[in-house]
Amino acid sequence: MLYIIDGGLQTLVQDMGRKEYYHLGVPPSGAADKYSYVLGNLLLGNPQDYAALEITLLGPVIEFRKKTVIAITGAPCEAKLNAEIVPMWESLLVKEGDVLSFRMTTSGVKTYLCVSGGIQVPDVLGCKSTYVLSQLGGYQGRKLQAGDEVQIGEPLPGVFQQVGKRIPDEYLPPFSTSVDIRMVVGLSSYRLSDEGLRAFLNSEWQVGLESNNIAYRYTGATVTFKPTEPAFGAGDNSSNVVDIVYPIGAIMVPNEKELILLLRDATTGGGFVTIGTAIHADLDLIAQSRPNTKTRFISVTVDQAIEARMNKKRKVQAVQELLR
Image (cartoon, rainbow, N blue to C red; front, side, top):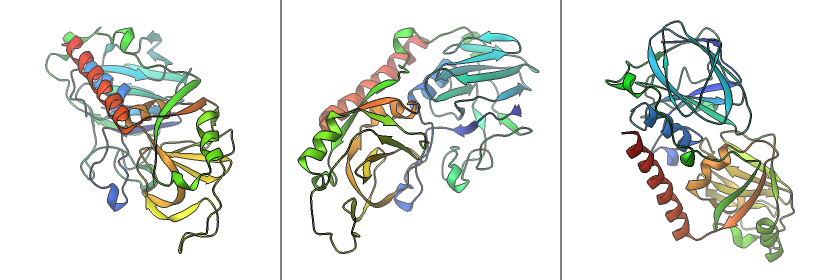
């Protein structure tokens, strides 16, 4: 069991997320940076989808009440086991009574604490992920706070022989203050003027402070619309269309000065002009972008998006082979 001494800024139980409920208004949720989360589970020999703790910016203080093996991955931060700094991206032995504490992340946003046997909370709609907005899943549908007691699984057979294993540096993700996000242009992009589309693709955008697991906001350029007669039911503003279903990664233009990019806790539909969709392979990169991160959007084809997704999958498989 984990005893939470301090919950930090926002510590949530997350796994691979909910499937097949988005059309009913329930977003997938799940780990925001799935690559870092999955690599943490691989270090422990866990199945890839075992639940872990997702830590946002300022981490918790946790007392372990069971001997086990853990791995810390994701956004770089100083973590101490009792008074000793411990490495990230490596499997670590913890004993009953040990206290793990985290400082502020030095770059990136999301750090993951994976535990052998996974975090044990009840499944809700098929998974253990937390959707805070609806208080759904995870630990009582909310972030962890002082005094919580979180159950963990029994250490998996052979995991204590895994202690000291490490992810090779060439497989670690980047954490930068300047990123390129690949996206496929489409949906209602026809509502932008040619100048507006060029401004979107040729400008540098910055991540806003009001960014979270639901959506990221960007400012930095002006995206103009074509003058059009509003369709029935769309509203009078140039940024409005008749309501459509939003995919995860949708890049919307609520006004000429701002973009909204939907992440894994996204709303499922609405009526804003949507330029296109960020590719699946780059969602992790977006979730690890801190406020003020400089961002450029790069247009790619659907085939290129699929190839990027397959490349990432092959990278995870390569790590899995190395750790066997």
